[in-house]
Length: 102
Ligand SMILES: [Ca+2]
Ligand SMILES: [Ca+2]
Image (cartoon, rainbow, N blue to C red; front, side, top):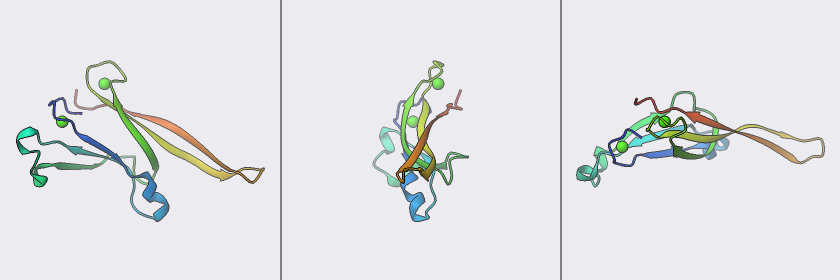
């Protein structure tokens, strides 16, 4: 994500929303090959602002706008309700987080 050639981790924590736990999309920075075996060297950047308390389920990294850096795409459950036929109805949105590094 930061262009240092050390793959970073993106986590989605949406399933915990139903358990009343904090949720969001989190980035964990890779310290690079020399320090990768040191757990203290991995840097938890926390949740991306605005992703808290939402039901994110999946994320992928792609260069969406073609500027050469990876952006983040995630899907979030927007609504859940019981339809008139008694069946559960879900709707999802795809959210694009533009990489702010450049
Ligand atoms: Ca990196
Ligand atoms: Ca990009």
